[in-house]
Structures are given as C-alpha cells and as structure tokens.
Image (cartoon, rainbow, N blue to C red; front, side, top):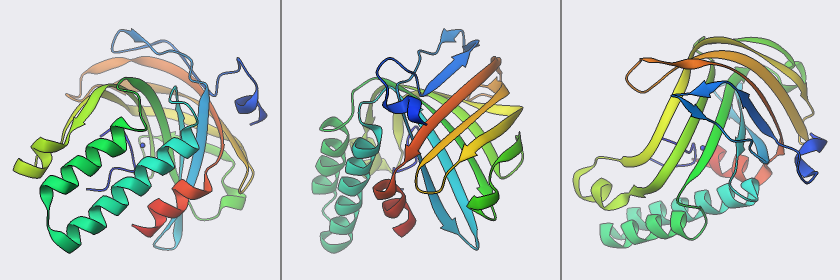
Length: 215
C-alpha cells in the first residue's frame, strides 16, 4: 500500500532545484527520479514514538497528504453513520483524484524511538522497528473493488529493504530531519530488487501527524 494515510504514505527542501530524496542504483531495474518534496511525521504509539520520513515528487507533500488523509477520515466517519458504501467509494476516489497525480514516486524511512531528542544516530534496516521502502504508483486505487469485495487493489510497485543501515543525521523536533543509508531491496514477491544508497530530508508535517495519531 503506497501511502501510510490510507485508513483500512532541511533547508534544502525549500530551495528550488534541490532534491529532498535521491537514490543511487536501480530498484527493480528502474531508475528512481530525484524527489523534490520531503516531510516527516511522528505518532505516539504505546509509550514509544513512530517516526516516518517521506520523500516524493508529489507537489506540496505536507498539504497534499494531509488533505487526502482528512478527506478519507471524513468519508470513513460518514460510512460509520450511514453505511452508504456508494457514497464512501465516491469520497475515497475524490480524495485521491482531486489531490494526487495518477503517477508518482515515494520513498519512506520509518523507525520507532523512545525519545525524539535521542533519535539521531545509526539504525539497522530490517529490524522489527526499522523499515525502508520505495514505491512507484502508476494509477489510482480501485475503491469500487474494495467496497464491493473487500479487496484493496492498488496500481503500484513497492520494494522494501530486506537489510541495510541508516543514519539519522539530524532531527529537530517540529522542524527538519535528515537521514541517509544503504539497502538491499526485494520486490513484493521477495525477489532481489537491487542494492541502493539513499538520502532523504524533510520538514515536520503537523497536520498529517495529528490526523494519523487520531486514528
């Protein structure tokens, strides 16, 4: 699933021409383009904090992902009230199609920490609490399929890191985050998808964090 906000995702970021996310090497024989947008979120979970750093070529990533998450949250709450799956389907389709391009790339680095103040440092990708993924979305979600059969059909290819290392170089609470690493990737079938190195940076997205934290 390409986006974390589906309900059932440095200074350099703000400078024109400066990529928030770059990958050296190919993933599934595809060259991943530089991504100019970056954002990170934090969610309190059972006494720990889950942190997710996202880079993408979707414009205005914080505002866009927050808008989609809010629309999907509203649609889900309406569904709990009226059980109108046709209305919910249309609302979920509109949430994506009104805000997101039909095709885009996204990289996600996620980890769990006891304290944001001590989050800087080295991590082992592949551990239960550390993950890295690259997704190429090639079409909108089939929400009709979901609301009629319960099967979520996405048009995307996601590769995940089976192993690797990452370093959080800087994390300023409520502000910016910068990280880099190396990863051995596998595709959705578990087959080798390439070895890469990556760099990511982004600014804190308060609205998106608040929405995900309320789910």
